[in-house]
Length: 313
Image 1 (cartoon, rainbow, N blue to C red):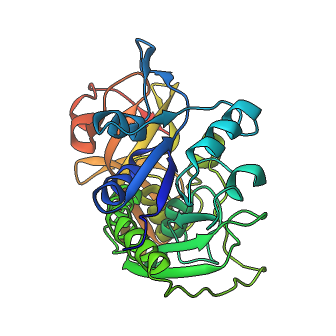
Image 2: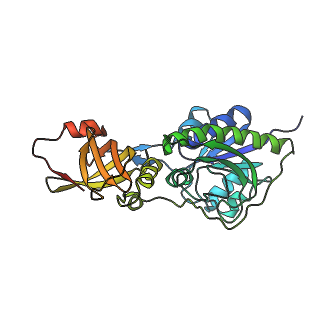
Image 3: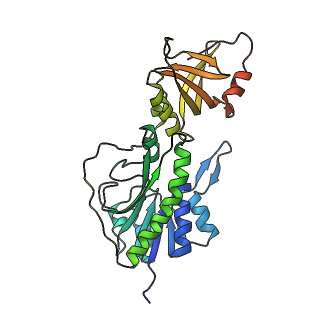
């Protein structure tokens, strides 16, 4: 019987936990590398990463380097003697780390590479109106997300999906794809396909300023934009109530395709919810969070208005 592979897992958010759990149940995980604990929330309480929480609960050793090139950290990895690094939703690795294991470093990416390379593949796929996405396993190389593809699995994106629902689906499918990939590595039945280097669709990191809604875009584009950013990092706009401006996060809406001659970008109340006139119809806001307030439905927002209140964008 061959010696089990010694796998070092690297990941940070919830998306990576399902993969770690699946691999822990089926292979030998010798350690976990994750981001340092951070202060979160209003109380600024120090909170471990989701991956660290799972690892600690299952007695898996944890490393949390601030600098991935740090000599002490690299020495720790060398002493662990991993056969394979498995990376899921982690930082970009220096070569001294990804080239260390004898079998290299295996990455799970939440898109059908080569399309949507980058930090936010799920968001960008939905924002672009894609009806299909998936997960890809590949070996790391110098340029990010460009290594040889090992396996892929496709997942549909429905019209009702948002980034959260697709994230959860890919999280499960991705864990199973990783398991299958590592089994193939163990059985020496693996084959890889080089990626084309030039692609049309990328998935760069999304910042708050990228999330403001342009109400002069076609309604369908706005709909995809909102669901592609929901529940995080969340599309936003600015409302004015009685001339006082405040930011509003928008988590869910509905585009009503309808011919009209009204001015684009007007905020009105229609069907009991805040509604914006857009190109090709109306955009109803069904789930929102006004600045410094809790998340509420569109109906609750309207019921909270007083007689004489004026609304505008």
